[in-house]
Length: 139
Length: 139
DNA sequence: CCTCTAGCCAACAACAATTGTTGATGAAAT
DNA sequence: ATTTCATCAACAATTGTTGTTGGCTAGAGG
Image 1 (cartoon, protein in one colour):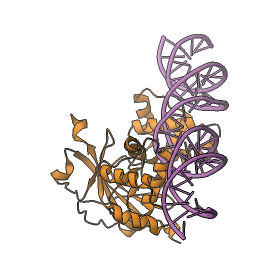
Image 2 (cartoon, helix red, strand yellow):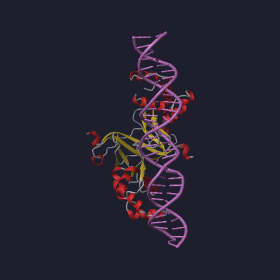
Image 3 (cartoon, protein in one colour):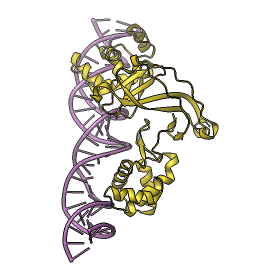
Image 4 (cartoon, chains in turn red, orange, purple, yellow):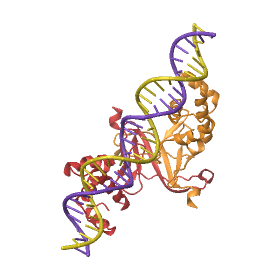
């Protein structure tokens, strides 16, 4: 569900109206997807086109989009929620210095957690966080 | 450095005095290690023995212990810093519902991130977060 | 023993990210 | 046309954490 027509229907299916704000936030998030914007970052860009758009509304719309499984929010310890345009499972590169995040699409062989370590946990998914430094921070 | 004698010396080596507060916080963290307490959780227990111990001081001592490489703080998206008694690399099970965390010591085969996805990042380490539900939350 | 200093305390304030609230305005759907 | 939903501005509140200040206390070094 990465195109606007699909989203329009998804909104309506949930009883949500299709508004300029929703349209704008959706498109901005799609465009910024690769850098995993925070809500603030989305708002910053969005207000260039719609200066009256409130941060509060951006938060609300991002929540809605998450509810529609259009985006996914993650917390990788950078201090704020970050948004992924790809709701499917993938992995992340995190820069220890500047907090930059990049998606990584690699096959990670499923790791079996032995029962004596699982202690009753049921594992649903497994994410890998690769930590290191980005090109910029290394120079 | 998991015993008190070692820590005493480490404190002194950094010019930090050995105080009852430091001793208490250290011992509590060691004891609670398996459940990866937050600062608040440590404080809650610590005040049972030393009711005047301030949360502010707990934060300070935890920072110091992290500086001594005795503990490690991690952020796994549960809303607060959590502390590991094991400063070495390991992995984590996180309960999606209650935020419970368990250490996992398994060998994870190193995953190669192909250069076109690395984009200049240098990968230092790779941690796996296993997400799911704990035994308690499933029942 | 005395002094100096670090550590701790309480009591604040500030912070950042996020969520809740309210009442008014405007636009969509029926 | 009417009802309902969305949004807005302007706030307040929350949570986890850190900074500040001034005063008290205890330990280390002489």
